[in-house]
Structure formats: structure tokens, C-alpha cells
Length: 146
Image 1 (cartoon, rainbow, N blue to C red):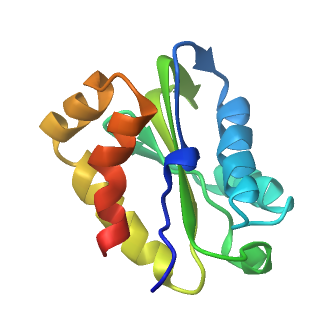
Image 2 (image 1 turned 120 degrees about the vertical axis):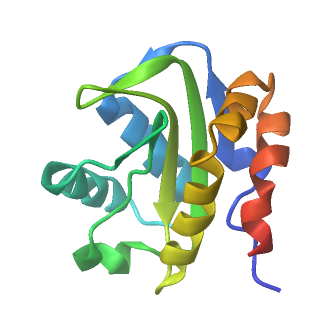
């Protein structure tokens, strides 16, 4: 049985806002605490962001490392943080920051799962409306079933 890529401990809700850098750091810290990445992964996220924005539309950003930094990934995992005050992501409004670490090609599968959820505005509205990390986790835990 593969371990779940998302656990309740990797889901957070903040009432305030954050800078893009703070949001990326939190995403990386959660992944690191989950044992999924090494401390080098935050730098990898920043490198990726300098090359291409990880803003995906529908208030979602998915920071992740570059292909060259695959050795910083120990296991596949996600971190999910909702910032109710928003994050200015290079000029785009972001509410959800989902950090991804994918071992091998697993990140592609994980990315497609998330993209499916966030391509539906009704789903996004539900995710914005839930009151607790537990509820947010419950809605998103479908990613573990892939």
C-alpha cells in the first residue's frame, strides 16, 4: 500500500495573507516535515518560479521544484495551504498554494488530479467555503485514491 500523498497534517488554513516567498516556504516546510523532501527543495521551488510562474488560474498556485533537483525529493507528497487573505503571486490573486513533490513521474498524475478539482469553479467555491483543515482535507483526499 503506497503511503497517502496527502495527510491532514499537510493541510492548513490561514485567515491572513502571505507573500509568494512565504507561501512557497510554508509549502516546502510542510513537505519537509512530512519526510518528502530535503531542505534543498525550497531553493528548487524558487528556481522554478524564476523560470516560469506556477500560477495555474482559479486562485491556485502549485509551487514545485525543477527537474534538475529530483534528488531533493524523497517521496511523493502534497501540501495544501489556503490563505483567506490571499497571496499576490506575481500579480495574480492566489488563495490556494499546493506544494508538490513527486517521486519519479508521479507528480504528473498528482498534478492532473489537482487540475481536475480546480478546473471546476463550483469545487473551488466549496474549497473556499469549508471552515476547517479537516473539511478541506476531506474534500481533497480524493487525490490519495489515484
